[in-house]
Image 1 (cartoon, rainbow over the protein chains, first blue to last red):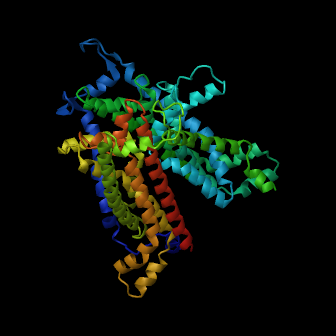
Image 2: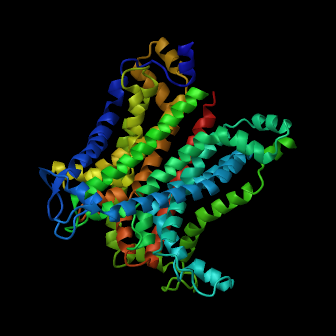
Image 3: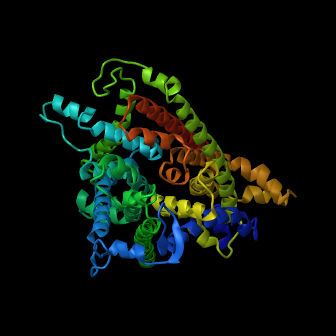
Length: 307
Length: 270
């Protein structure tokens, strides 16, 4: 019976009719202070820039024009495609994609390893991964920078062991940014994969082994498709924040390796900023993220339909 | 024998080891070097507590103390507000049957987790400037309350899902009012989830840099924003000491939240 199933999952109708009232404070706060402001970004991206920051309430396409087209110094040349900003976006995509890939390569086996340990050990190991997840991202990034600096402990160690004769130059390169993204979001990959791997029924693997499949065949054909939702969730949790990351590119990349986060940040800092342009850049980022989320939701519906 | 064989994939244990090594090495290194006597900070030259002393009594200590007070005030109030709203929302989602707008509420409560942080930061800045509110304690507090809601909501709703409504139903059958059933039955059983949600949003608030940096305005600083300002000119040992202290606080709070959450689960295993 539907009612029984509901109470079994901890839901009930005890406060029937009060639902909207109970949700009202959360709805109102998130609606007014997040949903509305996000919509306001889109509006601001179509307004005119005011010098010294801020906007003039006059409709304008200047921000998007500046993003996509180059019209020369005086603005009267025939428009050509402006690659500068598109390149920053493509580069951010590449960085975020690579970070997702590396997190997957390390995170998937780690999550599977934890999920297959006995219960006590499993709880302890997952806690070991959870702690860095909650530790201040700024401090984690600073720690990483300290470790990999030219004169930092890592280079001192590598030179001491004789593996290198001169320091490995990482800070202010895109490799450092990549390492920073990977390091920042690795726990975001492990936790969701672990959550689906923990529910995996090992009897499925046994059945597969009984039918003479090798260990790897079983993992690839039985285990991986079963824990796939966790893999997708983990990938989104790494990809989306990596795409808009600010701290890793800013602290580890220096001025040369620019990502979307720094581009947007700069538009709102001081008199050199350009609010409509920053709002346009944020709108474009938000649209990309929305597409990723919608694609994911659609594939999940398809999965449910097929299963 | 075969059972464990299927669980163990070759190389996975080593990769897990690497994963833990990568996650913890930078944190351990910075904690160790915060006790380094040399101010050139790369070469180890003996143990000292000087950098910790400098954090508390040095030239900049007043700035750090103010920032710490601000951080704590914001975290205490923002997580209290968001926990209360998350609690009401969880009761609405899980104890009020189905109604219009219930399914969209999942999305709305989770929204702060889906919007990229830089977009939230820009959105809040634009919105507050649109309202004519200049950056201050109030703007930071509002922004933190918003993004803390999902972090408070998740442990509370997870816990509530584990509690069947038969205890509350029994109470109302025995003529308790709904408010009494909530206060005397559900609330005590939910307590571990509530504490865990409060602590998690506390940590998230304490840790936030990007959104705070956009909405704080001039003159109002929290610990992450002063630390960010200080590392622009290089990583000084006193910053490492302060970072290690913050690390310690985060770790203690996470462990506390975990232990309280687990204790609760074991007590009410149904």
